[in-house]
View 1 (cartoon, rainbow, N blue to C red):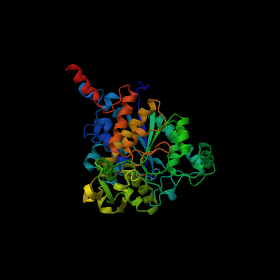
View 2 (tube, rainbow, N blue to C red):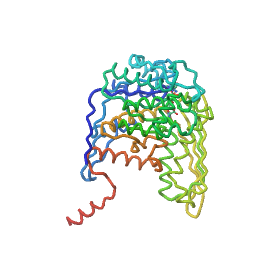
View 3 (cartoon, helix red, strand yellow):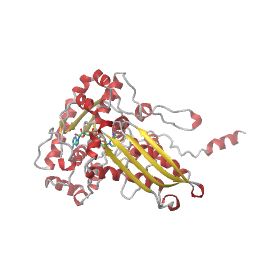
View 4 (cartoon, rainbow, N blue to C red):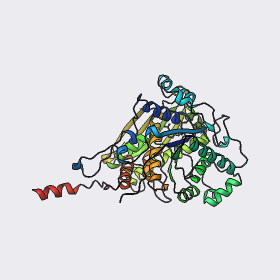
Length: 441
Ligand SMILES: NC(=O)c1ccc[n+]([C@@H]2O[C@H](COP(=O)([O-])OP(=O)(O)OC[C@H]3O[C@@H](n4cnc5c(N)ncnc54)[C@H](O)[C@@H]3O)[C@@H](O)[C@H]2O)c1
């Protein structure tokens, strides 16, 4: 059944809380691509294709030619940060992209100045910016963010807006009774309850206005019943959490392979050195805890020690992130994986990934923004599990195990697009090819 998918008419605003390394790499990248200076590598929406129908049909259009997505030329960026740097200055400081490239798009980037942030230092101790909104209650703070969204939309004559959180990782906190329902959450906003994190203020403001929200950090934010309720009430899609980039990306590529071959895993030790502002924020143990929890779930959900105790029952999974300034954004990760095979004979795999965090994250932000806008136009609301492909810790319906295997996540994403457009889903059964041949012979 083809869903009613509205066309992507007019301009799309992408609002980003947190104009740091990831966000500036995305914005500069889109500007560079628009000017023909670079290629949008790593983005499914820009370069990916999708098979339709049978293998013999030879139909594999580009995803962007198959589903109606906003064009890069129709995107307008905006955002908030606790620091006053415009996007050009922030990108220069982040040190991810070549200064020559940034110079070529300097006027476009300088025009982008962050709005004052909704911030609470208790959630990110290692930041000391001053571009911050003053507030009496968190409810009024949320109203101020809604005002920002309204003004941004009007100023740029936008048709639609989406929000993608690229702000820092907040300290670890668990859902409390105030997060249980929308009514309790709104009361807590009015009571100025300090258990409401800044990221929740942005998410609440966005969802209240029907603006789709994707969460790029491991923060709790919209992973609470109150936000899911609000997203359903305003017919707004949500997705999260924590962009799946470097080491976890590799884990969700490799672990499904080991599991597929029924090879045992005794231990998986992962460590990183990272020297950007994200690394500095994560140097605080309370903020690291949020990231650690997000990263730890991956292996257990792929390997399922509960179903395969003889293969994964003793699995020891350890993750470390070390702040090391000389590396800047060019993270280096090491994985030592102790595996065993036939008759229990041990083997080892070593991965040394010299990656660039923001280079891997930027296309994810672009894809999420374009897909979550598509979801809204397709009449979808609430948790968008089909976007799990992009997240380390995918949000799912209560009681539902997340799917971490990147290949299954891609199948789900592609089938969702086929479903939206009224195409047959692909099951990979393939018996029909042989029935046809038998019939012809
Ligand atoms: N780069 C990656 O590969 C990757 C992968 C997964 C998740 N993430 C997450 O994405 C986020 C961004 O990463 P980054 O490398 O750009 O970090 P960054 O430190 O360079 O940028 C984050 C920005 O958010 C701002 N900020 C913090 N709280 C804010 C608030 N309440 N309102 C507005 N701005 C706020 C900070 O001032 C900072 O400029 C982090 O949470 C990070 O953990 C990054």
